[in-house]
Amino acid sequence: MRETDIFREKLEETFNILILLENLKRDIVFISNKDSKYFDSVIKKSSFFLRFFNISRSLLIIEMFKLLNDKDDFSLKKTIDYAINNHNKILWNRDIDLVKLEEFKSKILWIQKNEFESIRTLRNKHYAHTDKMRFKFSSNLTFTKCWEIIETIQHIFISLNIHLNGTQYIFSMFWDEPSEVFKLNRYRKVEQYLLNELRAKHDLGELQKIRNITQGKED
Image (cartoon, rainbow, N blue to C red; front, side, top):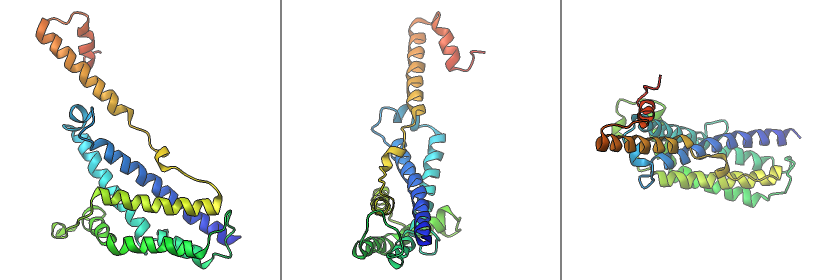
């Protein structure tokens, strides 16, 4: 039925945004973990990772805004409303009652009432646009609160998808730790070891070839 295809398309759009949000969340947590073995040697003094952190934070807010903004074509509230209004026309893999759909809608309405204004302020005044008065608009939105909002939306999506398609997703499986960071950490250790050896012996011998590589002189 046409209503089923439309609803499935709406869920697919939600899924794509949630995948991006999950990756942004985990990237932010990963590079801001001050207790990690790689933070001091790789992250702390890197302007690249600082830019990456700031860009990820901006994109996180922009993508969250898409799911919670009622004016967006694929807002989650609109998707749930479509499911409620077309409940009997959608071909469900496992039937879901209207009470459950209304419960999902209530959760989104709670987020919109209590957290959306902060998300909108950050999105409109700082990230999607640069408002010259932006610093006069405060927001108390924390990363912890963002993670809670994303988790709530994920749970709603997972349930809707199970009932529609009979399949379940585990969002954490879509993210891989950036191996490059661990390689950079090992590089820093090698670099420090060679420097210590040079200070002690004043001659690295064959190890000088490795130091040349770390200094970009291997050619």
